[in-house]
Picture 1 (cartoon, rainbow, N blue to C red):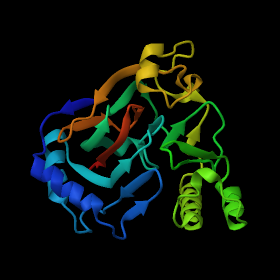
Picture 2 (cartoon, one colour):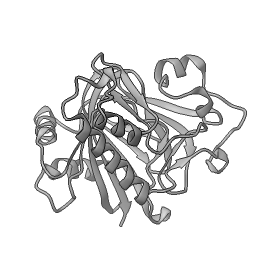
Picture 3 (cartoon, helix red, strand yellow):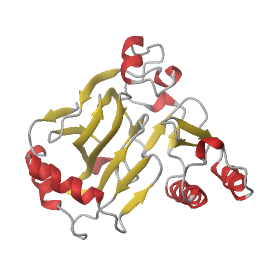
Length: 267
């Protein structure tokens, strides 16, 4: 069961982590909707000791850190599980530390679990190169195929919603390269068959009011068979701890938020 541990970071610790997040380096991945950093544990120079102290306080077993991901996001990540691609028996926890939030920011946890490789869940087909790119009005421009969008831009058929973007061709090419790399490393990272989900209840749907408030970015049919365990609010300096097999998603209320997640294994 997901749980929150309060007041683990003071403001000076949060500021140090945000300062690191703002620094562009070779661990930075900049996209129109998400800016992320992926420092390597025990290798790169970054404020690792702050988060190591968090892990030591919230985990009661010897752990190894598999990955660290900082995210500065204006979107809401959809249904997924953080199981990785390794031995499921060695998985530890995901430890999410909110650092800053604008608007109502939450993570929604389901009383459902997944024992396969990391995946996203969607009953509707998800096109491999579709993307939602923020436009100049604060909305998003949807393209079903980044490759075709790149061709259009190269041939001066730029969608009006994206005309404001600098280096648009380079941005699209970066998105294509990133998506191509993920498809190679995680070829089966999207799941439409829910029957292998632990706790799956085919005739049950979450409450409509809850969906409207927290899950407006997810089509209702994609939530069928899943049971909401709890909605965990983001409070900077707290830590949200949950099993890596637990299905979860971002809430839909924020306009922008920054957090860091550490994925652990049992040593």
